[in-house]
Image 1 (tube, rainbow, N blue to C red):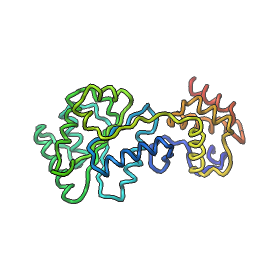
Image 2: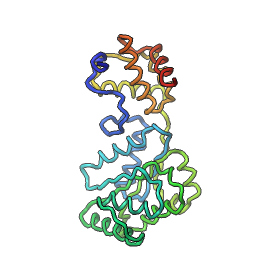
Image 3: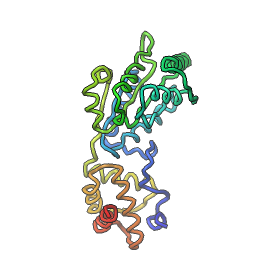
Image 4: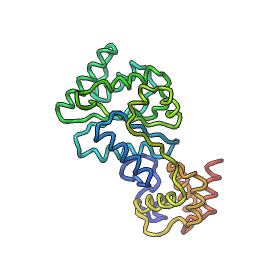
Length: 266
């Protein structure tokens, strides 16, 4: 009913990260291009940081989509808060689809074999560690660094992409051996007001909007309330459409945005 009221074909503010709804703000394009450079030029490690909801995972999903027609094997480890041994087993499971319980040395050997086999077949393996800021054990991060010792005479067998919230920056500052392996890094900032408005328009048009749904004053109020964080923009935008539908409104105005903010804060 809500979609029909606004003449939309699908949910415009769904929070599932994906390349299909990648809004290419200048900073998100910069983040994507840096990570693509790290992967395609086999630079070892790339790091992308930002607050919750800034779009790190969306950038990575878009990265995987960009590489889908190329000989890359992209695997994502979403919960890395593990001991060193558990981390290696989780990586092996992601790479091979098999759960193994051997010693750490044996698991490392299996990872090495998989990487060598992929290299021989012309595939390049990309390992994305999401939520890397939750890794509390220095030894676990050391294991990630040690994976970069698996290389040929010319290049790394593995490209590592680290995603995390700002505490990851502090962690890396105290871990020089791994920090020195980071070829490129980028810190995503919230959208400014202009790009928040463009983000709204992009999402609504992608959902089939054929008319203006948010007034400019409403879009500016939504930017102020969300702080320019895409995740918050989505949540507030969705709530605005619901409240506007309930009120029978033709457009979302500043009053509806304020009602959405109060509803979410209740």
